[in-house]
Image (cartoon, rainbow over all chains, first blue to last red; front, side):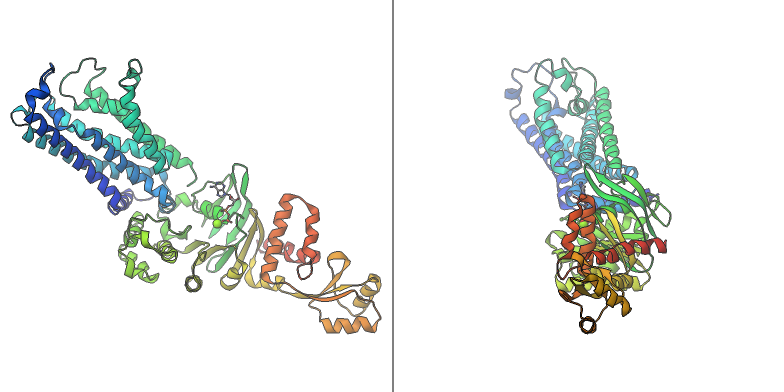
Length: 255
Length: 334
Ligand SMILES: Nc1ncnc2c1ncn2[C@@H]1O[C@H](COP(=O)(O)OP(=O)(O)O)[C@@H](O)[C@H]1O
Ligand SMILES: [Mg+2]
């Protein structure tokens, strides 16, 4: 059997030595923090105007995380590229010849990818939160308020799971263009549209993005189908299913 | 040692590899020859467990590839040129590969020097020429200092200088006692590099024999004789103790015969001749003949055989000489 620590080192070298993957990860940080900061600043400056006809309590955490949509996009692209560029370059054959134990290989890849995504997501989530709060001035909240700390950690876990979900789907499709072509429209067109349509909405509530993003909510929302932890478990189930699916395809397929 | 046991691979309707069994002898250069589409690359992918056989198996010193714990230390392969991420430097490419098999980092710089890529070690592969990509692929193959190296069409698309470099490298590797298994669709390429030859056509084994033996069997010359009175012709040949073989279109061929001696002999006996011609076959022709047979065999059309009897090429009898005994040699060797 190949040595697992050796696989981890090797996969780490792979990820850090290609600019495009490193950049998408950096972009996750930049857009999430940046857009959150911008929206927080605007909200603070125009607070009474923005809040005029809104009866719900103001969500200072949610405002800071206004950039999540784009952050999600960036980390999904990171997950796709990290796996998919081996297929597009034909390098997957070199990899599999070096590490023929395909299940172990994918476990190693997911471990490295997941760790990197988690570290970057945690940093992103906390920096986003604190920057947002600093710019919200008198309207800001603190980590000590109910559910806020959970929401910040939730944002990090959600981003990490999306990255691994994307990696699993890319392994299943063994093609990075196809993976982007499936994932991006799914998360940024299909899922938002479906969750706005009555009836179909119930289905869309079990998609990984809707489920995962429940963890970010600080206040109960009207008509919410389930709580943050159920949302976490649903998103986790999607992520594991994608990775297991990827492993099955990788093990069975000719490279 | 690489051993193939009845290896078969089917892609949908295409039977890419059809019951291949042979061994790659250790310590020499074995040429793996076959026309494009013969199944060479598919066979090599199955050796590395990249493609899964439909039937049969490959063993490496008795083990399956998947049982090797650090395979790069045992077998190194170059399959396609440029199986490298364009955005990664040559050194980083070799580094992750080395790390995966716990090969020390200093070996990365050694192989870079060995293939002459040290000056571009920190350049991204995007800008590499085909030849540089090929050298990087060879560096990856040599990284684990393996006992066996396997190259798939390594000289394809290279300039003459690159071709010479690869030929010399393979000789050097074999000289160091390594097993070299190299594919090509060019007989001429094999003739200058291989010690042993495995020929396939349409996924089937056509020959498996040492190169000198292949040359001996396939580069002989003959004199072709055609006469309206064949009985008399054969009597005279028999009288002179000359062995003959049936040629195309009712002719006869005297293997290694001297054309002047034969002409004088038959004139002295008053035998009327319609043809007295020298026949030469190159190794290239022997190869084409062999693989044409495979094509015909699979298409199942008998009459095509006669086309081989055109002047200057191999006759029907030659075919029997060229192809069949080659398979027989394999039997004897096993
Ligand atoms: N992945 C594949 N899918 C379908 N057909 C394939 C695949 N790989 C090879 N083939 C077919 O198998 C045959 C043998 O191909 P290959 O092994 O590449 O031959 P060679 O390397 O000798 O030129 C060809 O007919 C080719 O089209
Ligand atoms: Mg080929």
